[in-house]
Amino acid sequence: MGGVTDRSVGAPLGAGIDIPVVLAAVGDLPPPADPVWREWLTHAELAYCGSLQHASDHLVARVLGKKATALALDWPWEVPWQAVEIVRRQLGAPAVRLGGQLERWRIERGLPVPAVSLSHAAGHAAAIAWLPGAGCPGSG
Image (cartoon, rainbow, N blue to C red; front, side):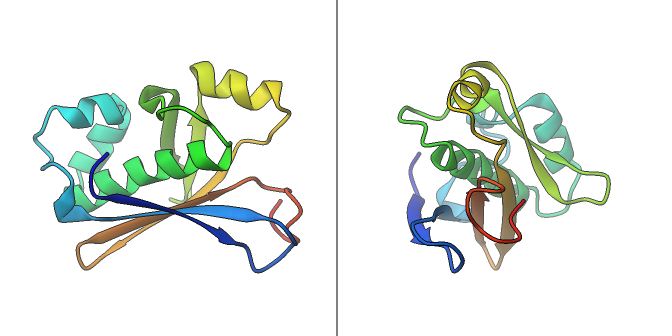
């Protein structure tokens, strides 16, 4: 995906813990009407983002959240976009819902469902994902 930068940074807590950080300038990705968003996001994600002011910012943040999730799971292939959904918890925080091959990959490796944080401001978006309980105090 053009315009997206992946970074893996050491977490401040716990030795040897990497947390994927994915960054993008919102303007580097396609406009909201581009059909590629239907490949990257589920119908529910598209409906949610489309209902918000600054829809582009929210679309990009969700795509980055999916990419960060795949990185946190050490998924070695292209992100299976429809197998990762970024949903909203009751209080509004994002959460990850997995399905298909990525969910099978996670279960086979005994990994927890990743947690995710999304951010967007001033034409940029970012996402981080981590495995709760993976050696970081307070992460579970």
